[in-house]
Image (cartoon, rainbow, N blue to C red; front, side, top):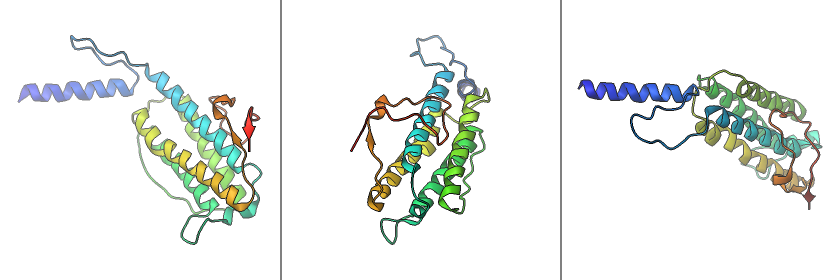
Length: 194
């Protein structure tokens, strides 16, 4: 009984150390090396910057009336998708802070929603760039809020094409994406195509 409690306590201590950036203890056997926690944060910051770059391209130059466009009667409008993306970044911040909560917003006009989205992205970037501890594993933050946002960037790009204002394709592996650059103003594309 006491041994089981000690094992549980060791596991909880190890998880707490790992979340706060410490390497797990070896416990007498070889362990596979793990990148330091700050490397995970830097990767998260790069993912956030990648989403900002792609979203910036998706919304740039979109007419205000594009926000009301939808692919079909039962699908979301472009502004509803963008509102959801802002909600995802607010949710991601709450997860990073260790106080997960979902609070859906009411869609605003397209230009206001573009501003709200990038403000939410900036808040998450600011937290990730700080020394505050992550309230959840980096993988959870990626697989939830961040990966979902990438899906929705693609939906907005698809709607732009259906609306008659397509976004040019790009070789994103050549894009000059920089951690910390998460506003609507991004670097110029290096290699676009139609």
